[in-house]
Image (cartoon, rainbow, N blue to C red; front, side, top):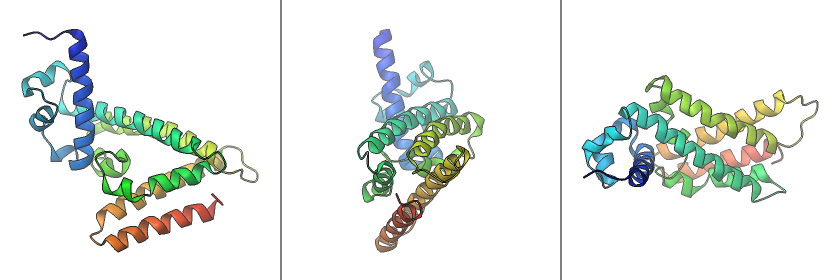
Length: 195
């Protein structure tokens, strides 16, 4: 039975959403196409009607995830006009973010995988990172003698520390150490820029 274009589009979106969550939970290599399609409620045979390959799905799911991340970060920054970057840091370096990789940050969940999965996946992450850098740079407090480069450098540093702290907090077996990593990074980021 042939599905309508509308149903095919809905199926594609469902595959992307399920793949995005499962990739963040299990890594690109930790889940196969059959399991993704099953979780999406579709047959494995229908996959190639939507995507050329698993690598294609990895890149598209990463792009979709990072688009949602951009919107989430924007809402978080706008939630506290007096301290937008502090609001982002608090939300990102939270227990909720740490404890639910399937709905959390793609950078923290998939960075090691992305480095081994070809240029198309790396390009998806690069393209997704650029608008986040711009958003954080705009939220960085005024810096003396700033010509724009200093704000971008600060944004890169803030994002790098947030992602690194989240990776470490997820990686350790001790809940106390994990909390300590999140708390220390939050405090450091806020102190260093009076955020």
